[in-house]
Image 1 (cartoon, protein in one colour):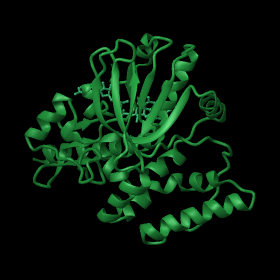
Image 2: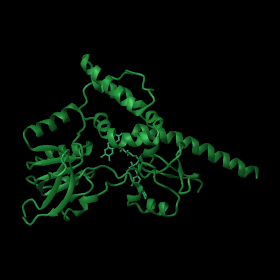
Image 3: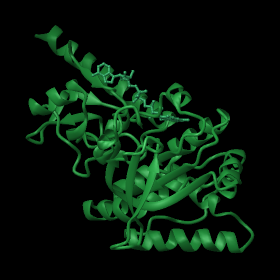
Image 4: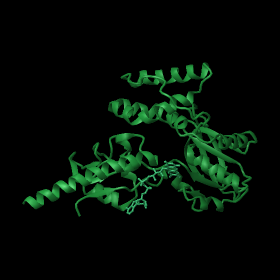
Length: 319
Ligand SMILES: Cc1cc2nc3c(=O)[nH]c(=O)nc-3n(C[C@H](O)[C@H](O)[C@H](O)COP(=O)(O)OP(=O)(O)OC[C@H]3O[C@@H](n4cnc5c(N)ncnc54)[C@H](O)[C@@H]3O)c2cc1C
């Protein structure tokens, strides 16, 4: 075999503290929606994570006529925004060279759009085709700052939901069935009471010493795919890591990879045999999860591999 492409996609979500949820009360991978059908209609549910998977889970529960209370929790409690306008234009020149200035420009452009009767979504839409370029123009420290402080806000404005879905979520919040909370789980303990058997201790965002405990029947892990390959459970990834054939990206966003998809090994050399595409390359491109982006990446990689195989065959023929 001449070349090997790792196209292993997303890893399962990390369980972290949720591993302490008693068996039978945790849905560790919500992407298999048929599991949601097993949740009792009256069960109280905690969804950890407030992104698109949370929205899918809530909507699936609503379709199943779920009656019990649902709490959705994440550090900042930011849920996806709604689509409104699909109009896209290029509102500004984004080539300012510091993250702080770009953030300010982004906020003022979005705000002035809204104030002049426009829509901040146009600003986000206009940036969609530029995110890889913008990510790559940041240095390591700025990328880190973006991930720590801005990424949750970007994600909730970038990955939006249909207005009808947003309306359904809003209606569930208004009736009190759904509550979206900002906070951090600090402890999980089984509850002696058979009703609501799991105690979840939460520190609400912004409070240092105050905690609250909620009692739930079911916990659904909607924290998203694990991007730290050191915690990836796939035996293939673990074996390649042990052999030093691959190493984690510096931000722990997938694998360390060269621009052309070549995998970088433990000593920093780019392989000409092993390469990767898709979500494993997130650290290099940041937004490489949507199918159209991966399609473009696959096309470029296929062309590179074909020409490199042709070059190697010519060398063998000459020899
Ligand atoms: C719930 C959900 C909804 C989404 N909705 C959208 C959407 O609406 N639009 C959009 O553009 N994107 C969406 N995405 C993102 C998109 O689906 C993924 O980013 C994309 O499928 C990744 O493509 P991939 O080929 O890299 O990996 P995948 O499609 O995940 O395929 C990876 C394949 O590799 C196999 N594999 C992994 N490890 C091994 C191994 N060790 N040995 C053998 N086989 C292995 C897996 O079984 C799988 O078949 C969604 C993702 C999720 C989870």
